[in-house]
Image (cartoon, rainbow, N blue to C red; front, side, top):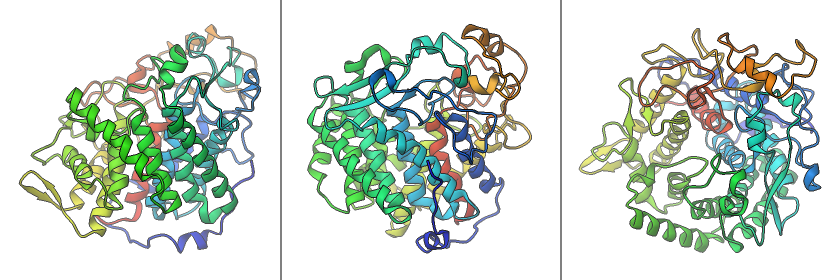
Length: 491
């Protein structure tokens, strides 16, 4: 893959020239740089010549061969060595949205280019995963059970690498829909920097959406045990169909997909009525796109009520708040990898605040009105907590600040690198490193891990507690936009 070349000055002309706002408690520019560097530790395939995280080496160079297709490159989703197209695509969508909305904060130094390259490593894989459309989408590579039975460097992998696909008779609307959203969003990012690549992304996004919408069904049913319980789709696939359609409208600057978007949202709302799922408008994750759909559509004047419900649900002072907070102020939604929700909802808050401000509006929650900057304040408090302003005095980003997690649940980081230990480490031999009380041998710089224990502000730095100490690409992705915003934007 050739390194992305852009005329940075030309890109800057498209970006905001907002100046530095209030005094910063943390170095957001450094946090942005490290948050992007993390993705280099997750790379699969033949690493590029400009790889900066040099303790990682080439891996999984035969991925896809069992299915007769090239599925090399892309990202390992977390601390293991399986590649899942669904969360990988969501990671790409968030990276693209971060660049679209807050690329001005990435303009200093090489961070815009680093962000674009991080995105392209992902979208190049997604193009391979959709190479056999209109009939097939590749949903994952690697057997999660055999993989999880090992604690093994990706460079040493000798576990089975089966290919799992969805097709017209065994559909997967959520994985194909999220890929469509990711490719459409990325096409906007590359529209000026690389028009030919942008056109290719958008063309494939349209194909993926047609497949997802025409052959409706869940990949959880089609693939089964390979994705469940790991990335089982609990929210259904209508949210991905609405999400993808909305992104295609944005990428094509049209309303071509609007009737499909509205149809999917009607089904979502019906499900909400049947299940009495009151917090659905503050859900935004690899599995659930509801809040993201409404914030995205509110930019063109649609579903503004639902987008405002999201804002009122997260604002700490809102009389209609549905989100819980720890005593130290961290948003709390789940006992497993809570920082995913922290990052994704913070990014949404900043994007929504930006467009509320541009529309010269306020946020109405019950009988109380809030200015847009209250959402910015919410997101800043979350970002500062992650970077160390919390009762533990702990940064939850590896390598940031004087105190950060040392026992990250991550195979490659915990095992000795090829440079230090060039000989093969067999599958089960690596478990001695999982159980070792010493810090990880390689710093997975920039990784944002799961976070504090179960709604408290206490953190148990234990490699064996994956819910607390495992990093994922979709945790880091929204923070790319959050940190970029706070580099040079006023409240």
